[in-house]
Amino acid sequence: MECGHVGAGRQVLLVTPRYWMQPELPRVTLLPIGLMLIIVLQFALGRVAYFDQAMLGALAAKDPAHFAALLEYASQKYEEYQRAVRAR
Image (cartoon, one colour):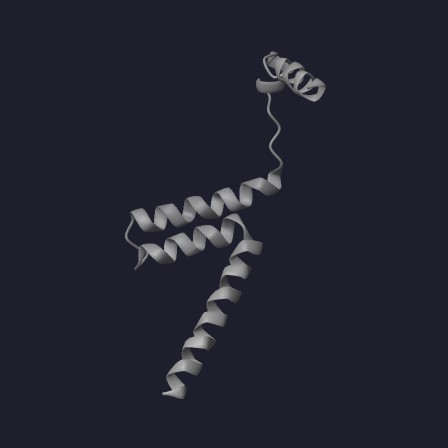
Protein backbone atom coordinates (compact mmCIF):
# COMPACT_ATOMS: atom_id res chain seq x y z
CA MET A 1 0.00 0.00 0.00
CA GLU A 2 2.76 2.39 0.82
CA CYS A 3 4.34 2.06 -2.63
CA GLY A 4 1.12 3.14 -4.31
CA HIS A 5 1.07 6.36 -2.36
CA VAL A 6 4.66 7.13 -3.25
CA GLY A 7 3.91 6.58 -6.96
CA ALA A 8 0.86 8.83 -6.79
CA GLY A 9 2.93 11.46 -5.01
CA ARG A 10 5.51 11.42 -7.78
CA GLN A 11 2.83 11.93 -10.41
CA VAL A 12 2.12 15.33 -8.90
CA LEU A 13 5.59 16.40 -10.03
CA LEU A 14 4.58 15.81 -13.65
CA VAL A 15 2.05 18.64 -13.37
CA THR A 16 4.75 21.22 -12.79
CA PRO A 17 5.86 23.10 -15.93
CA ARG A 18 9.47 22.04 -15.39
CA TYR A 19 8.69 18.50 -16.54
CA TRP A 20 6.54 19.14 -19.60
CA MET A 21 7.56 22.52 -20.99
CA GLN A 22 11.01 21.43 -22.19
CA PRO A 23 10.94 17.66 -22.63
CA GLU A 24 14.26 16.13 -23.57
CA LEU A 25 14.22 13.64 -26.41
CA PRO A 26 17.47 11.77 -27.09
CA ARG A 27 18.68 12.15 -30.66
CA VAL A 28 18.96 8.39 -31.12
CA THR A 29 15.16 8.10 -30.87
CA LEU A 30 14.74 10.30 -33.93
CA LEU A 31 16.22 7.68 -36.28
CA PRO A 32 13.44 5.05 -35.92
CA ILE A 33 10.80 7.78 -35.98
CA GLY A 34 12.31 9.16 -39.20
CA LEU A 35 12.46 5.71 -40.79
CA MET A 36 8.83 5.06 -39.94
CA LEU A 37 7.83 8.43 -41.41
CA ILE A 38 9.68 7.57 -44.63
CA ILE A 39 7.84 4.24 -44.80
CA VAL A 40 4.48 5.97 -44.29
CA LEU A 41 5.37 8.55 -46.95
CA GLN A 42 6.37 5.84 -49.42
CA PHE A 43 3.13 3.98 -48.78
CA ALA A 44 1.10 7.18 -49.23
CA LEU A 45 2.85 7.88 -52.54
CA GLY A 46 2.23 4.36 -53.78
CA ARG A 47 5.92 3.41 -53.81
CA VAL A 48 5.28 0.28 -51.70
CA ALA A 49 3.85 -2.61 -53.67
CA TYR A 50 2.21 -4.35 -50.73
CA PHE A 51 0.94 -3.06 -47.41
CA ASP A 52 2.72 -5.97 -45.68
CA GLN A 53 6.06 -4.63 -46.91
CA ALA A 54 5.37 -1.33 -45.19
CA MET A 55 4.37 -3.10 -41.98
CA LEU A 56 7.53 -5.24 -41.99
CA GLY A 57 9.63 -2.15 -42.57
CA ALA A 58 7.94 -0.36 -39.70
CA LEU A 59 8.46 -3.38 -37.44
CA ALA A 60 12.14 -3.56 -38.42
CA ALA A 61 12.57 0.15 -37.67
CA LYS A 62 10.63 0.04 -34.41
CA ASP A 63 12.11 -3.02 -32.78
CA PRO A 64 14.98 -4.86 -34.52
CA ALA A 65 15.17 -7.60 -31.86
CA HIS A 66 11.55 -8.63 -32.33
CA PHE A 67 11.93 -8.38 -36.09
CA ALA A 68 14.89 -10.77 -35.96
CA ALA A 69 12.86 -13.17 -33.83
CA LEU A 70 10.00 -12.97 -36.33
CA LEU A 71 12.36 -13.77 -39.20
CA GLU A 72 13.76 -16.74 -37.29
CA TYR A 73 10.25 -18.04 -36.61
CA ALA A 74 9.27 -17.58 -40.26
CA SER A 75 12.38 -19.41 -41.46
CA GLN A 76 11.65 -22.35 -39.13
CA LYS A 77 8.09 -22.61 -40.43
CA TYR A 78 9.32 -22.43 -44.02
CA GLU A 79 11.81 -25.24 -43.39
CA GLU A 80 9.03 -27.37 -41.85
CA TYR A 81 6.89 -26.69 -44.89
CA GLN A 82 9.70 -27.65 -47.26
CA ARG A 83 10.29 -30.92 -45.36
CA ALA A 84 6.58 -31.74 -45.57
CA VAL A 85 6.52 -31.07 -49.31
CA ARG A 86 9.58 -33.25 -49.90
CA ALA A 87 8.10 -36.07 -47.83
CA ARG A 88 5.12 -36.35 -50.17
